[in-house]
Image 1 (spheres, rainbow, N blue to C red):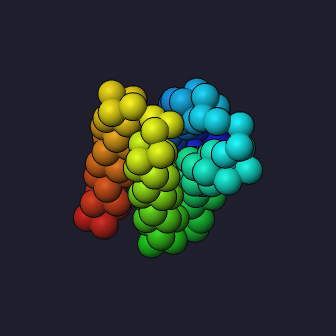
Image 2: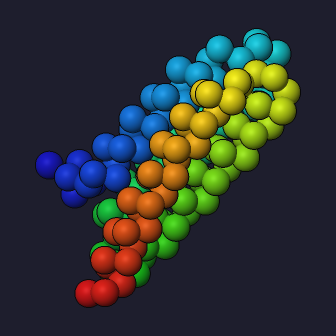
Image 3: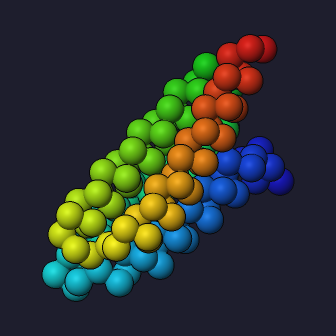
Length: 118
């Protein structure tokens, strides 16, 4: 078993990514190679940076990748704001994804704090 497979943040990131995919795949087809692709890339980056960082030799390096994951969460949210502005995403769905992103960010930040306290 890989180290990342034991991490709750990785499991939650996967759930978040699935939610993102289900919603952005309903955006207009003309956004397929623009907004949809950008949001999906940012969402995937969350989990991939958790995975990559978990294999680093020091907590300091892992923390750096966790912070990149948080940056990717912020990118997703910025993209969702734009989708909402363009009428592709209603407020209910936006709030749902926003709350999930906030929960995931909080979990990642808690892990960072724990690692910094070692």
